Length: 173
Image 1: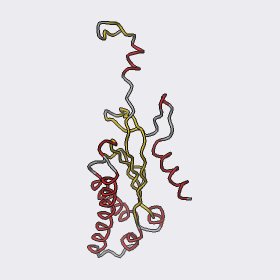
Image 2 (image 1 turned 90 degrees about the horizontal axis):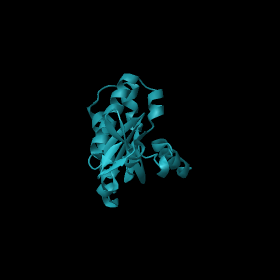
Image 3 (image 1 turned 180 degrees about the vertical axis):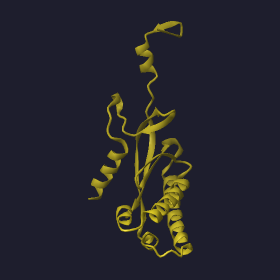
Image 4 (image 1 turned 120 degrees about the vertical axis):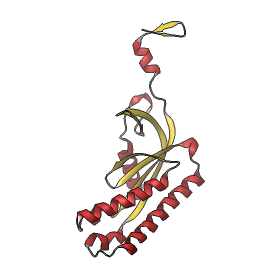
């Protein structure tokens, strides 16, 4: 039992009172287009360096206002609390990240004298951004808070980033 405001509260009710509150947020999945075919036909050592360099460029250009939540294969999942992002800022941030990606890709190609398949094919890579607005709660895992866009009122889970990406893919078809 815990003493709160001169009254006793059972431990179960204290846990309920401490559940994370949902926040309105903007989620972005920054995804490399052509990643699978790129990796399938090239030397992996150069390919991995190229992908890491390009992902680093894009993620850095999305900060701030976005925070990196995690990497999922060839994609970075970032988020920002909605109060920090408006439509104009979102468009400017995404455009800037895309132009920095294109510029970095051009710079790597121009600076490279390598003729391997990975270095020759990197120009076929592109970036796409999937943007979603919704609610999230922050879950503590490994000592850090992580966004959970799969949260729904009442605690039901909906699949988070995978659900957002699948929804985007269905709308494209």
